[in-house]
Every structure is written in structure tokens, then in C-alpha cells.
Amino acid sequence: MDTPETVASQSGDNHFEVIIVGAGISGIGSAYHLQKNCADKRFAILEMKDTFGGTWETHKYPGVRSDSDLYTFGYEFKPWVGHPIAAGEEILKYMGEVIEENDLARHIRYGHRITACRWSSAENLWHLDVTRLTDGEQLQFTCGFLWMCQGYYDHENPYLPDWPGMDQYQGQLVHAQQWDPGTDYAGKRVLVIGSGATAATVIPEFAKTAKHVTMLQRSPTYFYCDENRNELADRLRLIGIDEATVHRVVRADIIYKQFETTHLSESDPEAMIEMLRDQVRSYVGDDFEFEPHFVPRYRPWQQRLAFCPQADIFKAAVDGKLTVVTDTLETFTEKGVRTSSGEEIEADIIVAATGFNLLVMGGIPFEIDGEPVNWHDTVNYRGMMFTGVPNMVWVFGYFRASWTLRVDMLGELVCRLLKNMDERGAKRVEVSLRDEDRDMEILPWISEDEFNPNYLMRDLDQLPSRGSKPEWRHNQDYWVERNQIPATDLNAAEFVYDGQRGAGGRSNSG
View 1 (cartoon, rainbow, N blue to C red):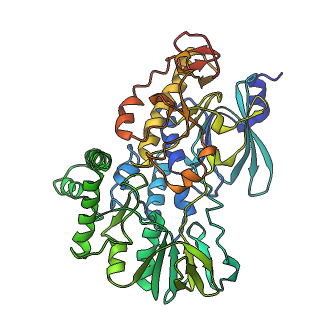
View 2 (view 1 turned 45 degrees about the vertical axis):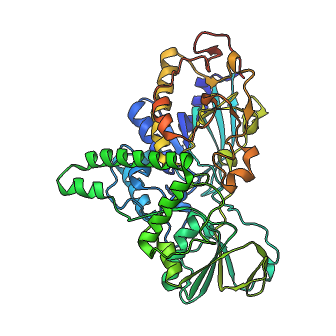
View 3 (view 1 turned 135 degrees about the vertical axis):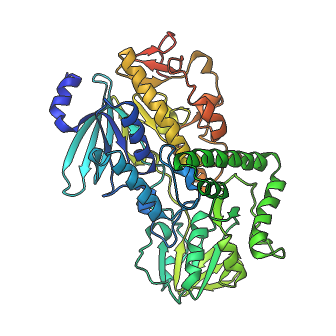
């Protein structure tokens, strides 16, 4: 049996102590924390695309922008100095600066698609099968620790319902995720199917030059409307406060306001709804009619609440550039679509803003000592580690707060975990249900009543399971986790190092 040292020697430059999967917002942020806190660790970032950016490289539809403010979506360690809601190209520029300022480019291997991950307990190593996309060569990588930062949806195959009659349509049908930036929509009739953040982004942009835009939605969405500026940041800059302090103070202020918004959504949803409506009225007038097209069927924050700068989608409707139809699609026709109520909508271009397909761990097949991993059979620990899966973490951010807040927190925690392994002389760490957890109820990843976007509900059985105790779930409450995660006891009984429980209890792989 090969020893780890033999494998490392055989693998040459392809053996690393840590491999980060993905050079998107999670992977770049995690690499920063690893390099800062564990400077002695040799690591690589494997990225399928030929450049960094992840979701910001995938999406090229008109007006693509963040739906979270950049003071909290930006990293804790690098001040954001632009508008709170930023275009995709601005976010890519920001990420490029992080890579350059921290000399991370030398660690990134672009065009590397991982096709399998296999753990060997005999070697305490992960073996990765990798295809180099430039020439198709099959490569082997090994690492002691795997840091999964590839996101949670399929970047190549978006969710496109199999609507009746699609083959009859004579115009151009495209999913927003596969939009060609060279497409000319000026002077054309554009139909957008969907009502979420993507629809709210493309519609105001289409409305600038299209002949007319129609939005066909099954049900409405909530939007948070405000100016695309931060008065506190502007004031602090005016009086000469340095950018690092501006970033820290404004970030804290926004996080507190997000907490108030989330709390109000749960404690008094009617008051929250009225506040959101007041925001819209401040831009389009007190006589704006919300019925029937802008009255969602769920309470605020059961699905993501997207930021809508200057209420631009509502302005498009008031200005007559946008028609909203709330109905279901019965069939495509030669000239457009027909709804269930019989309405015909003609369009030159139809854009499906219908979301994406969930893809757990990038769709990579995993094995532990020759046995395939079924993620739904595992129980997650704080949404980052999974019972029976050693030396691996998964970065999964927040829905009700900026994704990147969790990237920064988990980055610090994982580095603590790696240091703790070194101090203990441990080669393997995993999480395991404790004796007191044996009768714990095992539940789906997230409660439908808590958060229920379609992409999660469609494929909930693909995600790891959660337990009924707080530590055995991905808590979507950042305002609780920002205290819990930094205080995590890495020597507690749920952590098993080289077969021994952290608290000295008996080992059990859970």
C-alpha cells in the first residue's frame, strides 16, 4: 500500500495539502483566508472555466447586477467603494483586484474539470480525477483536505421547463443564463417568463430600447426598492474617513438593517409588506395599483427579497414600457405563447428567466473508500461538513443575507480547523452524530415554511439532511451564526480526529 509520501512523490506538482474547488466569489475569498492564516499550506484552486468569477462570469444577460449590496456581498477584508448594487463587470473587477493584490493567480488552474473525488482512509488522501479542457488530458490530483467552493447550481444547464409547443415557436427562445451579449433586441417585442431577480434585472434594461416588454409570471415577487447609494458611506467619505473604516461601519449598519428587515418579515409580515409598498409608491406615486400583479402569495423572505434600484421595474410598468401578465403558460405558438386563460402574447424574443438547476458539489461523484456518497443520506454540520465524509468542507452562503458573509466566517473557521489538526497531529477529521443525537429527528435540508424557492423545492432530496438540533443544520440566520460559528469548539464530541472523538468520547462515524 502506498504511503501518503509515496503518493505525493508520484503526483509531483499535483499533490497539495488543500485543494479549493472553484474560483468564484467563494473560492477566491476562501483562498485569501487560507493564505493569510495557514501560510505554510501548499494549495491549489481548480476552476472549470477559463477565468475567475463563477456566477458573474456565467451570466451575461443585459443589466446583470447584484441583488445584494456590495458592502456586505464584498469581502470583509477588502473595502467596496462603488454603488451598493453593482453590475457584474464591476464585481469581476473587484474580484480581479483581490486576486492581484494577494498574489492568488499563481494558485489557480483554469480549465480543470473534476470528474471524480475518491477518499482513501488508508492514505488519508483525496484522489481527484481531472480533465484539462484545453487538450482533454486526464490528470490525477491528490490532497489532504478538500474545500468545495463551486456553488450550488448547474452553470451549464439552466432550468427550462418543457413547455408544450416549444418547437412551434418561430422566434428566438433563450434562457437568461445562456444569453448571447451580441443579441440585438432594439425595436423588438420581448417576452420575459419569470418574476424573480433575473427578470427584474433584464426587464428595465430591455425596456430602454425594445419595442415593448411583457413579463409573464405565475406569481409575483417582493422587491426592496431604494436609491442605489448609501447615505452613510457618502457622508463618512465627505468628512474624510478612510475607506477601511467606511467599509467596516457601513457594513455593520447594513447588517443591522437587514436584521431588522428579516425580523419584521417574520414577526409582522403585514407591516413589512406595507413598508415595501411605501418604497414603491415613493418612486411611482401613491395611486400605484399592486393588485393583481404585485401581490405575492407568500410572506416576505420565504423567497429571496431582491434589491430593485430606484424601483426601475415598477417605473417601466407605469411608463407603459412593460405589461405584466399573471397566468400560467398553456402552450407556445408560432408567434409567441398562449396562457391558460386564452391570452395570446406575441414576441420576437422570449427570455426564460426561470432559474437554475440545483447541482450539489458540482455534480461530481464522490466515493469514500470505494463506496459512493449519497449526500441526502448524510447529516450536515452547520451546512459545511457532513457525517461520514472526512477532510472536506462545503461553502454554502446565505439566502437572507449576503452570500459572502458566510464565506468570510467559514474561511476563518476552516483555517482554525486545519491548525487544530496540525496541533493534534491528526491526518483525518470528520463530524459524527453523538450519542445524544441518536434519537434526533432527521429532516430535509431546509423547512419549506422557512425558505421555499422553486429550485430548492424541486431537488430537496439531492441535498444533505439536517437534524432537529441547531448544530446539525445550515442556519440561515446570519445574526445568530456570526456569534456561533466563531465560537465553535473544534474539540467538541461531534468532531472525530483520526477515529477519536474531540472530547475524548468513543468514536462512531455516524
